[in-house]
Length: 355
Image (cartoon, rainbow, N blue to C red; front, top):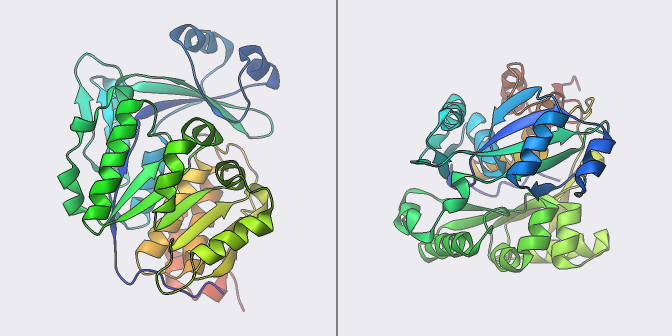
């Protein structure tokens, strides 16, 4: 199981998102309750609420990034070719965001908007290592359909749709335009659900795109909400059918299940990916890095099992510390996975084993 190679060449991906500065802080459950928003999700807040948060918590880490850029970074870090587009403010935060992309080899085609500030988000990490996000919009949410030329898809093999990219009518129009551009040129589409908030708010836009996507990635709760299927077996079976045959609807569907690992449906079969075996400190960005890492594997000639091993190794690092910086030690782990026989990797512990 998992020996299938879904793509026999290297593929480039265009990621579009909302450039953000993440302000990470530990918080007690009482802080989340005081603000009156759903724990573990992304919430849009006013400047007053953002200012109140500044008084309630102590920021431990400031990390540039967003859901789309996290996936792009994972893909690029592993050796893939990616570009990232979004709108940033004309400020120091935009410089930090650009520097972060450059560090990991992502081609930065994001635009600075004069007179605007870069969007920011407080990521509050509760004692259970869950994260709740409070977003203050800036330049990222001034995006219009005309800002990105659809002809840019001539340069890429895949367009990655992120669940956050339906924030208003202009972004809905932009996303649909780019999906149509990709498909009309014979390019592929990837759908990344990103967050349950995105499913509830944007599901009506997201589902039709997911239905024409070669690859989909999200967590079990997101799939359950979007497809209104509450039985795991029924959900898995549906995607087994959708990925089977000579002309499947999807090439691969990734369903992450937190501490239970992940299930991948491809070529009409299921491939299980074991969970990370590390002490969880902060889950911010975990799903994004899983998706980007797995996609790198399957879109660059590695088999599905290796792709899963890349994802587990990257996520094991990201969730073991505060912030979105990839640890130096992770490079050696990734190189070991690339150079080893798949059976020689203890995926659960992200290390080589002796058989």
